[in-house]
Structure formats: structure tokens, C-alpha cells
Image (cartoon, rainbow, N blue to C red; front, side, top):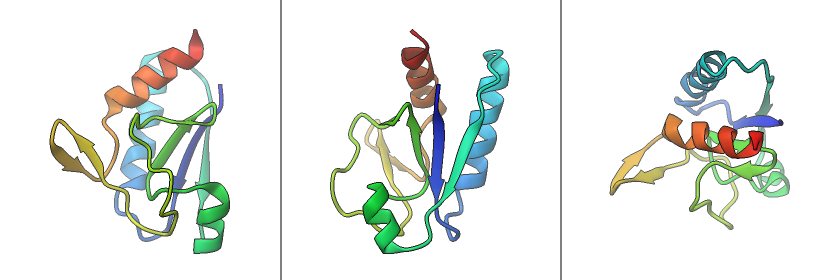
Length: 103
């Protein structure tokens, strides 16, 4: 399983997100490594199709079912969850994506 966390330096949420992913993997008894990918420019954001920070991909698939398909740039990412806005995806999305990838 390939787990990626894409971020940019000014994101206030990426380190907490990384910690949550690692904790979840530990609880699940998984030893998968999290590839932490720093996005440093808008050109790189476009090339990586980076919709904002933090972005989590499991086997190349974004954990957000409503992943943006344009507007790739260095920016904080906003997730809409139950009509509320969050600066990182809920850990339940990550958990579900890991379970789906493990099947």
C-alpha cells in the first residue's frame, strides 16, 4: 500500500495530519510508510495535481470523495464535512481509504 501526504511549508495542518495517519496505522497494526511530499511551487502543484495542503493519497487515490480536479496551487485545502469546513480530512476518511486499499 502506498500512502502519500502532500503539503506545503505554510500549511498549519500537515504535521497534525501526519501524526494522525501514523497513529491510525499503529492502531491497525500496519507498518506502512507514509511518503511525505513537500510541494514547493505552483508549477510543482500543477504537475502533482495538488489541490492544497494537506492532501492524502492512498495508492494514488485522494481520500476525499469530492477531490478538486482543477485549481492546483500552493494553498491550504478546505474539506467540507457534514456542511462544516475543516483544514484537514477526517481520520475516518483515511481509515476507510486504507481499508479499501487493503482489500
